Structure formats: structure tokens, C-alpha cells
Image (cartoon, rainbow, N blue to C red):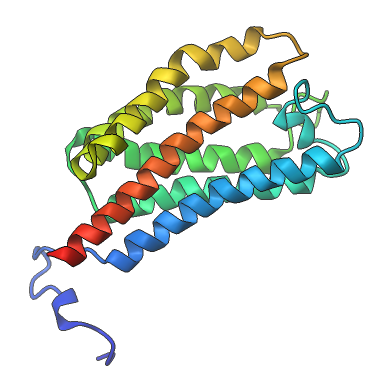
Length: 221
């Protein structure tokens, strides 16, 4: 047996309850927070590096096309990892109810969708290589961030009422604001898209702090 293995981690029978590990919860939380930070930094770097870029008019998709696409792609992949880390942490510490379960599955799927957005490199720039699915991925993200934060808000609220409210706020802000993006003039849609991104960060960071709060509560027992 591994000398570092706590015997309490091994169930005597398959149906015995298993312990939650604070280190896993904190690790997933830091990956989630780090993903948001790196995505933000990648956009800021691209804003300065990409020539003739107008951060108010040009969207993140505009930054993700062309010679310097790898800068934003790094941020997109890190945000994908952030979403999946939230799912892993939420599965490790299931805070109850079908909503939390829905959120776990939703975060996994959403993380994969975000990854596909970066990997496919289809940004509405007349890409005709095969089937262009970028707009459908965008629609899927729109639905995901309308449902998942609210679904997980009650579980987050069990750790902190403020975190539960933050999740609900993400949904309340997202549902009316996200569709407006498609009707905005090109002169400001880049700025507006960044605001929408901030709403998704609000949710992800709320879940990350929920995982950290759960880790602290376990250690305090």
C-alpha cells in the first residue's frame, strides 16, 4: 500500500461514502480563476499586438482570426479548462439537487464548446473550409450561460448567500443582454462582447469561490 495513502480514503465496501479532499477543491478553484485571468490577459495583449485593432468595434472573434490568432486561442483554451475545472470540483463536492447535477454536465459540455470555438478557428471571416459551425457554437453558449448559473445558484448559496446571488445575477444579466449583441452596430459590438464575457467570469469565479468555501468548511469540521 502507498505509504502516503490514508486508509480512510479506501471504502471497506463499494457503497461506503468517500471523503471530499480540500486540496482537490482548491486546485480546481485556482484553475478556474486562472483560466479567467489568462483569458483576460490574452485579450489585452492581442488588443495591443494586432495591428489596426479597435477594441470597441472589433470582437474577440476578430482578434482570434489572422496572424496573431494564437494569442486569443491560448486564452480560449484556458477558459475551457476553467469551465471543466468547475465541473470536476462541483462533482467532487456535490452540493445537492438536480440543478447542481445539471450544472456539472452543462459545464463539461460548455467547456468543450469553448474549446471547439478556439480549435475550429471559424470567426465569421468567410471561412469556407468544410462546414462552418461557429454561429451554432455561439448559440449553444448563449443557452448554456442562461441555464447553468441559475441551476447551480442554490448549491452555491449553501456555502455563501452572496455566491448564490452572484450565480443568479449572472443569469438575470445574461438572458436579456446576450441577444442584444446580434443587433448592435459594428462600432460598439466589441466592447459589448467584453461585457458579456465579464458576466461569464462572474459565474465561473462564483463557483470557484464556492469550491474554496467548501474546502475551508471541510477543514474546519
